[in-house]
Image (cartoon, rainbow, N blue to C red; front, side, top):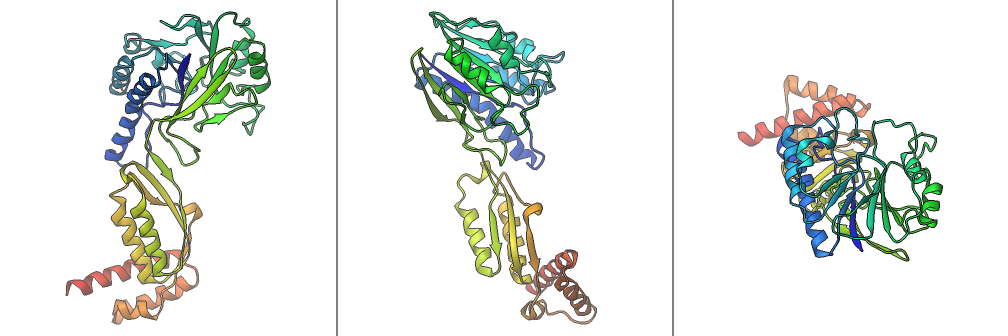
Length: 376
């Protein structure tokens, strides 16, 4: 028996640093992932799909986002089980109770901890631990496990959401999932596979080979390892095989460059040119070193020119320590005189003393003077 384990779709997610056009493509990619999961289910003969929480970014989303999601879900060729997570809990405003989803074909929302038979797949059931608030105050997965008897003659797939104690920096949080109890439940036959969500990177947990995080099907941030995937699970009572499948194609990159010469600026531009699919790439870049004004201006020009090609291209101030130190060639190239030259020299002295604002002013003055010279 095969099924697809996915999680953390977070439909309706936005990113403030994306321009409107890029933001629309980012949102559409998350809807497109639903269709891709359906295609993967057919290609690999998976009987159903489980979504281990955070189907939606929140319970307060536009009707348009909800309808687009429902339309995509309705077209899935296999049953899909949706677990409420911390982003979309089953509270008073639960989006997962919306009529649009109730009418969306083979969609099954796991609203309690009772096992549910998989339609059309005899001898297989799914059980979940839905979040009913953003702060449940207990290990919901443990409560679900405590309610179960060993599955006899039935394959049971459990679906939970949250961080496992062995991976959570603050394991004392009440909602943290206890790995020990989960592994014991696998060992005594109450569970045959535990599908986890909340961690956006594909991760095997424990030593049973039956407890996994699927990661996010579309990359969402810079901290994720191996995003853009879902898991194809081949399961029986004696064995479990898990295979990652590629779903999304967005990437978040955070490179760091040393900048001390014109050659370093050229190296950075070559790196940008080599990035595949920049329209689906978010870059935050940091620099360290020192440049004269001419090379600093070239670096600014590179960033401005390529920003239009990328979903987002921006500096990372927290890790950037790039000094701009004007030299004699800069002053000759600027070809200033009178008051402008005196201002230049004052700013130059301040920049050499470590005044970042003076360095920025010099860069601007340099670029303006070069443009003025080019126009004459």
